[in-house]
Length: 142
Image (tube, rainbow, N blue to C red; front, side, top):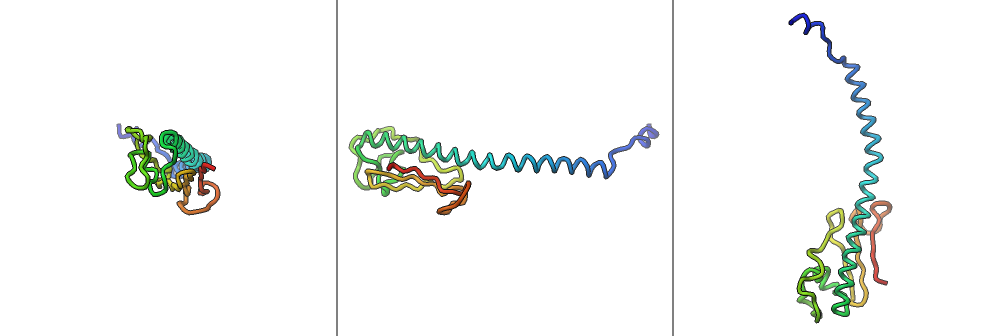
């Protein structure tokens, strides 16, 4: 029994280093191809969420002949606003279950005078402007 243990050999340090180098190369290839796709999906998901908010705003407008004002905010799509001009035909169940956030966890910026609106996400960098995946995402009713 002891003789078979002495004669068996494990992996040498060189073999272990080669395996680690191969695994590192594979991870580098996966990382450079997958991470950009992940960021792109966040942008697309944010656009889709904004389109859902836009649809809820259209339903609100159909019922009340105006959009929620900036003061009322997107929260007016969840519960009847108590500030500003109260809507006359507000749907008792609201227009959304909750106000979504963008894919980076930030609330959407909403501005409206009641006749037109703008929904904005600052993107990945959470700052105005930006390029690529950090570019601002805007939906405008105009």
